Length: 269
Image 1 (cartoon, rainbow, N blue to C red):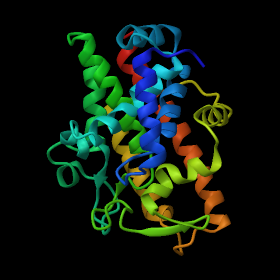
Image 2 (cartoon, rainbow, N blue to C red):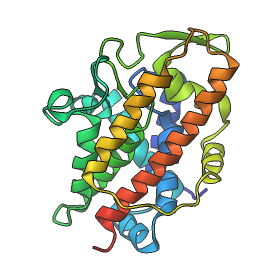
Image 3 (cartoon, helix red, strand yellow):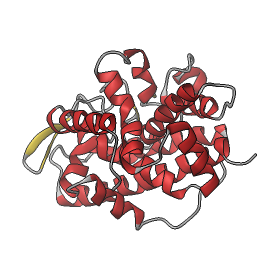
């Protein structure tokens, strides 16, 4: 792991405190999940695209990418970024089977719309470096959010925040089970999670268009509808095992899709 600048180490230390001590229901994936998505996406990039991204970020080192991709949660939870809170999820009525922008996100203030909006900002060479760096932070984070179970979910239970389950003898919100409870139980560190996920993929990024984000939203909603809620409120070994496979799959897929977006908006046209 590369050595991080002082400001990045400070950010990561604060993130770790929040992640371990305050498992807030609104978080998605936590530091480890978001960090893994970003690090693995950057690893998948072509050399030219990675160099372009490094010019925007200043560095594509491990710690710098982790800090950037987790930052939107810190910004929101410290109060300064409350205006962006709705960017992290989208609610769909339980009676519906698919996302429809005009009904579910008419003002563009949801994760599906913002993935496309931030991708466009990142690819806009007319913007300043700071503006494009901010767009990368949100893009990396929100692609992760879009693939996290219960971030394309229902308003009536606040994405599983009003559902309490018992996992390994401890009560927790179902939303937090998917956000970080399972990852914390199954891995000892971010590096371990990255190494585990790295072994899963060998395919280069495929092309991306804004319309693809709609399909990803519907995939996540199908996961919410068909699997994210356990049959009983105590998480048993079988559900945990299947959940862990889903989490690994979603993190891996998210990293590949983020890489595809980055290649599309930053690679050679």
